[in-house]
Length: 288
Ligand SMILES: NC(=O)c1ccc[n+]([C@@H]2O[C@H](COP(=O)([O-])OP(=O)(O)OC[C@H]3O[C@@H](n4cnc5c(N)ncnc54)[C@H](OP(=O)(O)O)[C@@H]3O)[C@@H](O)[C@H]2O)c1
Image (cartoon, rainbow, N blue to C red):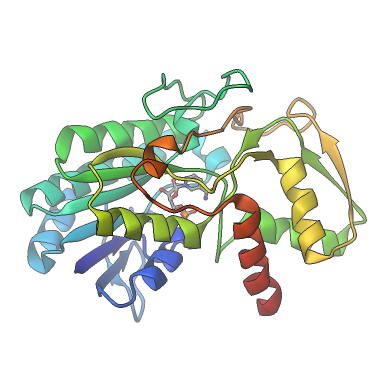
């Protein structure tokens, strides 16, 4: 299988590259290096000629504008990367009869769903952040321009890159006490497990469409932090605070819980978030 990876320098892309290392990979990103060719997904002509030339079987789009708070002040740039980019990839995938795999987010939902409910794929979208709005526009652009596509909505991603777990471990060395938000609910997701889900979906040829793909189980950032320190045997006091007390430029959803029933019904295996965290920490603590 020939796979074109866009945004190949990103955190998820690193796990995707490893997952598919036995396949023929064409790695691209906005910045080229020894292993990565330059491909700016916002440039339609560039994308069309690149895809036509290399003729991949699958395009995996890991490229995105992911700075959630900064996006509030950079709507046009976020829209270009999160909407125009996927649209260009969708057009090119369609012209070359290849499958497009795209990653989206829990932020397409407003997050105000009652906490005894979880979001289904088709539930009403009402994103409240620029990031969420532009990611939803990207989903729609793919639906309108591609025939063979998977949109995998994920959340709370961590892996080999700047992420919440790394930040908490670093802060625990600098401070005796940390305050962490306790009223936002969701599922932490290990990039390695999301890469495996992508691989299983392609292998099993599951029906095209939108799927929720996070690790199994739900928690809060506060409980997640306590589990990180517990598993890593770190002693640091963690105090709960509300979202009201911890204000950010972009308003975070209180309910980010995504139902995984649709993807699980396709026979895809997904580990729970505690199992994923344990495997990540084994790698991460060995690394540092
Ligand atoms: N991180 C999370 O918690 C999270 C949660 C839910 C969903 N997601 C989604 O998961 C996906 C992967 O996220 P991630 O955290 O792995 O992202 P990431 O680490 O920020 O990587 C994104 C990559 O895309 C590149 N890029 C930016 N503009 C580009 C362009 N015009 N053309 C080509 N490449 C471009 C970036 O390059 P530069 O770094 O040089 O800009 C970077 O290498 C994204 O779709 C994201 O929206 C992430």
